[in-house]
Image (cartoon, rainbow, N blue to C red; front, side, top):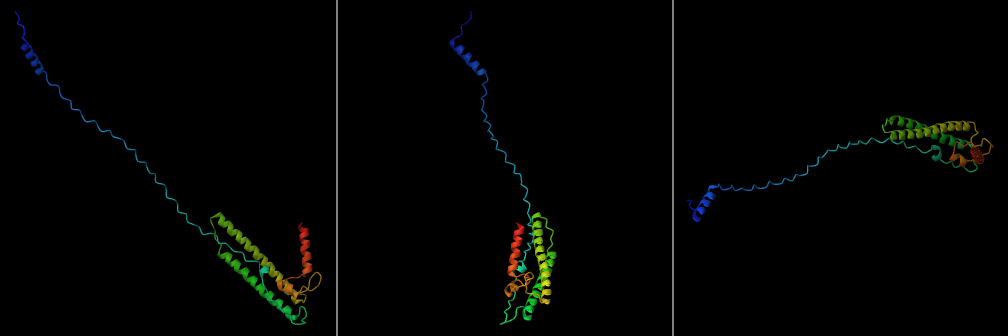
Length: 206
């Protein structure tokens, strides 16, 4: 006859069964890995090329044109004596003297200008400097050309003085006058004939 297990036996058997089972391993939670926040990559600095050093070129020397010698020239005045005859010997000598001085001054100016232009010839790389230099030289040469023509006119006037025809209008034969000759020693026309000539030139130019 099978003996019925008592309550105590069942309890002991259950306890043994529980003890027989290996205890479950305690799972230790691993610390969560730190989240790595990616830093933005540093911007690559591209070195800019160094600015080229600009070496200033010397500016073209500007040749300052001299004023027209005939227009601004002031001559020594002549004061005639009481009852002195027009175009007396002393008057002719006075005008001959100032004409020779004037001629020498013009000749020196021409020689000085030519020497100055030869010394200052420079080949400028900058087209603007080169154009400015050429323009100034052309203007200076035109002024010197007018002075050469004026020297020829002075030479002609000296010949007129030597022939005793100086001081009289070549068109009407009247006296040119001391005042006009002292302002313009190379004048060959009286003021009236010169005015008529200028009027004709204006009319022909229209």
